[in-house]
Every structure is written in structure tokens, then in C-alpha cells.
Image (cartoon, rainbow, N blue to C red; front, side, top):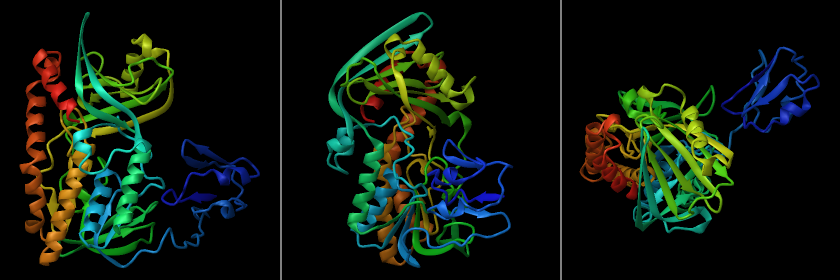
Length: 431
């Protein structure tokens, strides 16, 4: 029987075409091999990543990607906006940096509504039409409670709906330009820990390669394993988790300069729905449902929402995005000896809106600067790295803590109130 190493597999499907009995099928993005496999081995040579082997025969594992050094000042796990910003800033400060990305393509799959404000983004990168799908200067808020529908529209300010597949890649490229080494299709499988101190990461497949580092920065998303490996409690309470689903709809008629928000306990319990323009006749249409209030999957709620909006129902979905969004307070600790957490891994998302792109970039910059000071001082203890935690808490963290209190004060049953809509509108304007 042929065995698939999913850590190495690139989901290209080349093996499928070589099988003489049709025993291999590419299901979604994973090859599945059924019992009709004859162990002929014809597919093995077609795999460009060496992910296939015969059962009982360990495959020859060559180098995966570019050669890694044995040691770096900083290893960043995850090449999203948080990780790439941290890697870029650390490299700018003269540190040797390794940026790891477990996927083979940075920015994919997208798990984001892609909206961001100009004022928050501009300090990090100059807006570029290559990764901007729409420029918006209006927002419309619709509250639906039973048969009552109330809509308010606001104008002013400037924001963007991004093309995250391009945006994330550009951020990673800028990290490389600053001097960081990037390794894609290279996952962290664990941490090197000595006497309770994080000393590096283990990357690669079953055998693993040890890479030492003075500081490890975990930017590995809502599903972060770095925090768990480091002994930090990143467990997310169910009430602070949003289950989200989003279509990119084509063939719809909306104002391409306006973002639309829909608040309804029936429509999206504990959350809201959004329509963010992505160019002429296209939009990200999605919603988030509070996990402990979901009577059905988020995708079902989304489908019902679209069916109830004639101007959206006429469209066709061309992509489907799903994911979980933390709308929580950060963990009690964001640092430990030799390790920091940033971005979704650190729950640094706005609890009211679920927006987190520029929050993550800010945290990445703070973490890199704290790591640089710690390395220069020869002290990467949790006490020294806590400078990052304290800086976050005193700046954006203060705002996020306030918004979490507001989220708790205005529970789902009160989200249709004018007071909450006003608060939500202010938070959304600063996404």
C-alpha cells in the first residue's frame, strides 16, 4: 500500500495520473489511496516532494527547500501579517532571522474578511493597487430584529478591502528584503526546550531538524501550537470564539465604495454579517456566529442570509473561506523564557469586530523590538521579554480590553440597541 506523508505532500495531483488502477484520488487538497492499490510504485517517482512511499519502506528524504542554518537570533513561526512584520523588523534591527511557513503558498488559504483602515495600515506599508481590491469611504449598518429593520449610513475616512493572497506575500517579501530567511512548506513540529527555557524549534517531518534560536516568536494563528509547546495557556473559551464562513460572490450589484454590516440575533447569533466590496460586481459576503450559540454550522447561517437578500442571492460563489476568530482577552501570559506570542496566536483581535490585521502587525513590531533589546542585553528571560507584553497592554491592548468589556456588557440580546450599534460603528471604522 502506498503511504502519503501529508507534511510533505504538495497536493499537486501528479500521482493520480500515473496510477494504472485508479486507486489514487485527489479529494479536495489531499490524495486518498484506496484498497485497490497494487503497490506497483509507479506514482512514487511522479511526486516532486517525495511524499509517497510503499508501506514498510521508509522513503528517501532529501532536503526540503533551502538549507537552514543551525542557529538564528530569532525564529518566527508563521508568515502571516504578524509573523512577516516581526521578521522584517527584527532583520532591520540587525538580527539573523528565520521565518517559517507551514503552507506552500503564503496568504493561502485566506481566512479573513480583508478589510483594513488606511490610517492604521499606512505606518507599516504604503498602499499599493497590487493588493487592494477596493477603496472604501462609506459604511452601512443594518439592524434586524424580528420584523423591524433599521439602516444607518456613514461617510468619511478611507479604508481598503485587501487581496490577502497578494498582501501577505508582499509582507513576506519585504521581510526577505530586510535580510530574513524565509522557508515555505516548512512546519515547526515542536520547540527545543532546555531547563524550561525555549532554545529553538524542531522543523520538518518525522526525523525533524533542530534549529537553535535566542528567541522564538509564535505567529502561528488561532490554532497556535507554539504557545502550548511553550507552556502558555492559550485555550479559547467557547463564548469568545467566532465560527465564520464567507463566500466571494460574483455577479452582484452593490456600491463598490461601501462596506455593509448586518446585526441580527436570528441572522448571526452573537455576531454579525458583512458585505465587503472586492471590485465591480464582487464582494466578500460572510458572517460570524458565537460558537456557544450556534444551532447550526456558520455556513448554513450564511446561506440563509444570502437567500434572504435578493441583491446577493443573484450572485454566484467563486470561493469559500471558513475559519475561527478569537474575540477574547489575551492569555494571562504572552511570553515565557525565550518565547513570545503575537497576532491571532496571542488573541490580539478586536473583540467587537473580529478585525486584527493591523493589530497583528503592531504586535509583530513590538515583539521584534523587545527581542532585539533582550538579545543585546544577553537576557531572553520572560522577565526581560515582558517589555513586549507591557507595551502591548499599555497601547493597543488597553483599547482591546475596553472593547472586550463592551462586548460583555452588550450581550447578544442587546446587540440591536442603538448604543451598541454606535459603539460597533466606531470600532468598525478603525478596523
